[in-house]
Image (cartoon, rainbow, N blue to C red):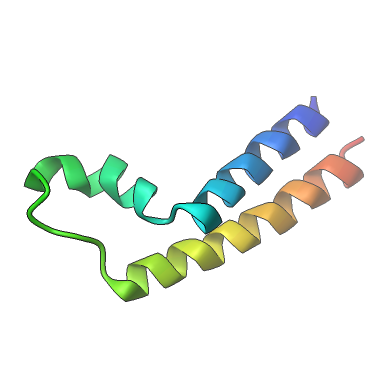
Length: 65
């Protein structure tokens, strides 16, 4: 169970690193109808949180087993 949960967290982290604007479009983008874009600082923090999520996912996978 922990292995699967860790894989989900790693997948979310990879999505945040590869496509950081996706989370913004899911959360805020639908409200503005394409008239706005995420800031550079938001994209940087989203990438950083992706790295953090991957680390946490790996810890959950290996320690939770």
